[in-house]
Image 1 (cartoon, rainbow, N blue to C red):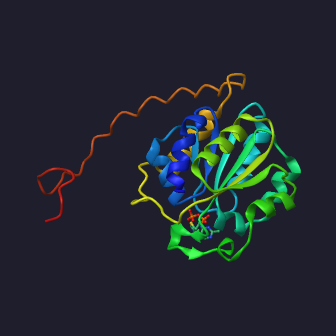
Image 2 (tube, rainbow, N blue to C red):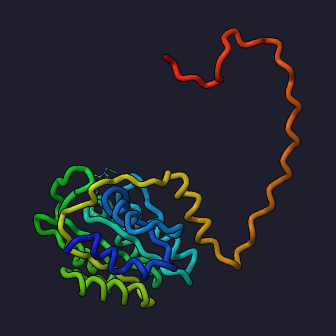
Image 3 (cartoon, rainbow, N blue to C red):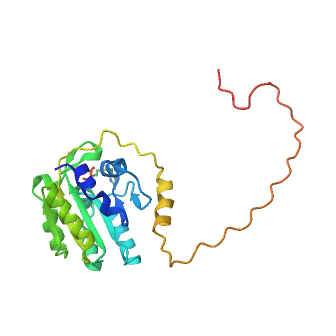
Amino acid sequence: MRRIDCLAAIYDELTECAVVTIMGAVAAELYSLGHRANFFYMEHSMGLASSIGLGIALAQPKRKVVVVDGDGSVLMNLGGLTTLARYASPNLTHLIFDNESLLSVGGFPTATSTGSDLALIARGAGIPNAREVCDLDEFAQAATAAIEADELACIVAKVEAVGPASFHMDLHLLENRFEFPRALRLPEQAPLPEAPPRPEPRAATPTTRQPTVAGPAHSEPS
Ligand SMILES: Cc1ncc(C[n+]2csc(CCOP(=O)(O)OP(=O)(O)O)c2C)c(N)n1
């Protein structure tokens, strides 16, 4: 099973959700299917996508939240699972794509390649609705049901260690950082205060210095 096929299979389900991904390969794959303002690609902080997702889920209980995680990231912060279990936000679905590898940084094997079972760990952490899936139909069905249901769910999808041809995303992380919360703003939330009036531009002061060399202002150095 390939992760990109899993993402494509549930892409339409994500239309109204807040989606938080980890960085690297899976972010680029979701982006390649078509970016939406309700997708947040969390850069750098391995193991913390579920914490951001949990915060959103608790703050907006009527919104479905989907966290798209990786085995390496989850293993780096197993306490994230216990925190999810503790708050058990019913509108949160945690998808963990387990390729047994730190694929985005060269494919080093993770502990799931030597037997660690993340679905079992999630259940042990206190998430009863945690299961492993190994084929695409099973994934699509489990993920769709989890997103629609009112119960915290964790789905560990065993996928091949293959990623996108390119990690390029034509979206600056700051652009995504501001766009995402704007997309999540609810109609009942207070509108933002109006921006103060802009000051009048100052009149240009005549310059006394004249350019010594004639030519365009930004000429390329020769
Ligand atoms: C705290 C931290 N350590 C290291 C990195 C470097 N890093 C970026 S992606 C990545 C691998 C992520 O592995 P996994 O979650 O399994 O996802 P995959 O790349 O396999 O899709 C690493 C080690 C990071 N971003 N943050």
